[in-house]
Amino acid sequence: MKIITQALFLLFYFNSIFSSSAKEKDILIGILENHEDEEGQNFYNHKKYVRIAFTKNKNDWEKYIKLKKDKNGGFSKEIDINGKWYKYDLKNFHLYYPSEIKWNVFYKGRIIDNLSSISTPYPEPKGKYIDKDDVLSSCNIGIQKIKELDELRFKKEKYINKKAINSKYLVLSTKKNNQNKDIIKEFTPTTSEIQKAIDFLHKKMYFTKKGKEYKLKKSYQTNNGNIKIIILDMDTIEDDECSCGKEHPKWTINACIALINGKPKLIGKSNIEFIDAGDYDNNGKIEYLFKFDTGFVINYILFYDNFEKQIEFEVFSS
Image (cartoon, rainbow, N blue to C red; front, side, top):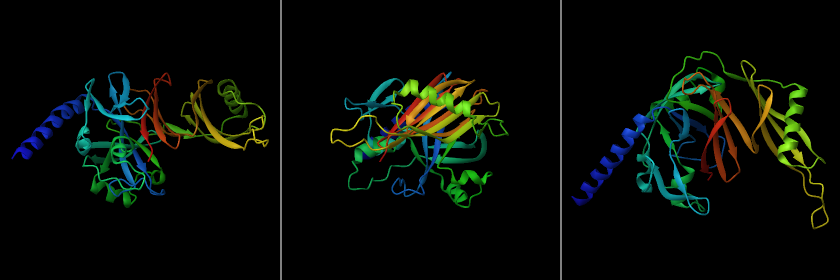
């Protein structure tokens, strides 16, 4: 009887906090992650799942779930609830999210489909080097299972846009918009635009000039051409020899530059990927979502207000 009473109290406690919180923060951005071509990354015995990332709070975006960092930069066992830090129970971590979320699926800034995700208890993590507490509190932050009917539908590839089926990441939003055309598209930048990005990188990244080879990796622009995103691969060789008397090995990084009305801005470097852009809160302004992967930490970075503001959602990769 005591156990049942405690369970009912816990359920009432979480529902009272998060049901009210979800109503106040009803505009959410999530990511539909597709890891079907990878080893590992298997959650709920599925390779495709939803990750809740951001919520709109008045005029700004913020992380939906905030975990406190410890002194070593990892996540501690405390979560921010309405501005206060509380110890959380990993077994009930799924209760920190709404029980079900109805999403609009975006591709190139317009809605192509919809789905629902649900919160269920996290499965036991498996793997020789996996720490149970760390995985449940960091790698799987924000993850929800796709509702079974929607998952069956996706397996039949009934997307409006067939190209979206193979996308590794698709942006989700709880807010609809009336956009019926692609907001962003791939394009070929001019030689002068690429050179402007390269010159800007020389000023910002402090690399030596010897042995650099720049190669255009990806490039995108908005329909009006005001925003252009240029991602460059750079093969770099250091000038100096290492202590062993041999030259440093060649290594490759990439960097992303946004040309905002022709003015360059560094979005990120090392291993950054553009996911998509769209008006995810239907306020007439475009948000831009990027993914930055160090191999240990994954950051989803959302830029908004014409790239003047940004918010990061950080998770540890497994």
